[in-house]
Each structure stands twice: as C-alpha cells, then as structure tokens.
Length: 376
Image (cartoon, rainbow, N blue to C red; front, top):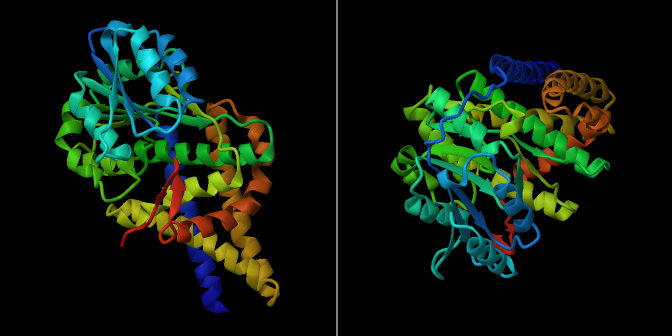
C-alpha cells in the first residue's frame, strides 16, 4: 500500500507540474495586436479535401470574405479522390475566381500528406497557410496571420482552432477537450518548447517547408502537422510562434456521433509511438498514466475500500488543476459557459483517454471512408 500511495502522489505531482508549465506558457503569450499590414506578402492557401461536399460551400464563402486582398492570395485545392460532389463544387468555385486552382491527385497517390506535398511544390506564395475543408475562418484570418508573420519573422505560426458546441453535453465535451489541447499547445509555445500543433490552422514559411518535406513520414497516415513542428523545432527553436488571437482562429463542427468521435481519436493517438521528442513523449506518458491510474482506482474501489480514497485524491487534484487552467483558456475564447459541463466531463475523460491512448496504437481506424491499419 505504501508503494501505491507513493505512486499516486508522484503521478499527481508530475501532472500538476505539467499543467503549471502550460499555464505559465499560456500567460507568457500576450494577446496579439494586429498592426498596419503591408500587403506585399504573397500567400498560398492549401486545402486538401476528401468527401467534403457539405463543408466546402461555407468554406468558400469564408475565403471570399477575407479582408486580405485576393490579388495576394492563391488558393490551392487538392482533391484526394473524393467520392461525392466535392470535386464538382471545387471546380465551380475555381471557375468563379481568378486566384484558385484545383489539383486532382493521380490514381497512385492518396492521403492528406501526399496532397499537401503536391500542393506545396506547386505553391508560389512566400507564406503557406494550411487549413481543412471543414474549417471556418474569421474574415480577418489571413490578414492577422500575415501581420504576425511580418512582425515576428516566424518560420512557423500556429493559430487557434475551436469546436463550436451545439448546446448538448456530447458536443460540449468535444469543445472542452479541444480547447484544453489548444491551451496546452499555446502553453508549450509560451515556454519555448512546443510539442503540439493543429494542421487546421497552420502557417509556414514556404522555403522552410520545402526544406523539410522529408518530415512527412508518408508511411504514417497521420501527424503531418506535429512531425513538421518537431522537425523545425530542432532547427529554429526561437522562430516558432503561437498566434494568440481570436481573429486568427478557425472553427470546426463537432463530430456527429460516438463512432466517428472514437475513430477520430484513434487516428490522433495512432501517431504517438512514432514521436522522438523527449518532452512530447514525457507529456504523453504523464497524461496517459494518470488517466490509466484513475481507471485502475475506479475498478479496484469495488474490491478494496482504500482505492476509493486514493483514486478520489488523485481525481480531485487533477480536476482542480484542470479547472484552473481551462477556466483561463475558456475566458480568452469567451466560452466560459462550457464550465457547467466540466465536472461531468472529468468523470468520463479518464475512461475514454485510457481506451484511446492504448487502442490507438494497435487498432485500425476508419477515416474519410478509408480503413487505416497500424504498422509496427
């Protein structure tokens, strides 16, 4: 029992220290203030899509509403063998504007990583901005990112991605989890040791991107964004920036059902065993261990009473530090209303993370109509 108490205290302390570091990093990043933007930075906006007929029309409307001049933007749309009307919708959009091109991938090429690689080689802009077909940017999105690029001379700029909840618990749970990831992402940038990034809102200097094309690791189906970050982190540790601005954010719709939610999380977890960054590995281990330990205590509490108090202590510690951190992040994104779902989310979180964290390394998952099997 002494060993169990020591482990419980140790994992709790490690988790508190981890979240405290993220909180200090979050606080260290000032909210970005856009200055007068020189309009001479050429931008290549790259969007790979597959079966996105429901999302492309709203994305195209958002792109047409951008306040950055269209003459300085080229839009590269890459069709990854869509099986619905996505290609037709994209063709219609390209035909209606003068600054967009549609790239159809050849039969032997498939996958988002390959799509991004193809588009980046054809891009002519000084700055590459990547987003997803289901993302919805603000009207000042490109202008704000370009302003940050000009002010900081960054090699990579990560910007916020949020999930807009629909008012029910399931979508609120997704939004809370996603905001915690975005807050942790920003926090890691704030302490100059970034370990996460989201490819739905990412800007990279084109020359630096092309120099690091080998980061893609095409044998791995997911993780193009994180592998790029880790590669650039080795070369330009002080040139990686998190753009803390609501104007630079994009929003995503929550997934509609539990099956799709789990498939998405399995995809995210599938790349974890390929990481080589020590801080990222340590972070993942701490998060997985504390959630696995909570699951263990939950199960053992049915058999041995002390585990009720041991698990309860770890749970309360984790919940308190998560609340302090998440409240800060939610305040910035003006989504404090989600805190009413926080406690219930905490009770479910360790169950789902324990499953996804382990199963994602072994089970195949289905995404965009494709079944992806894990490789060793």
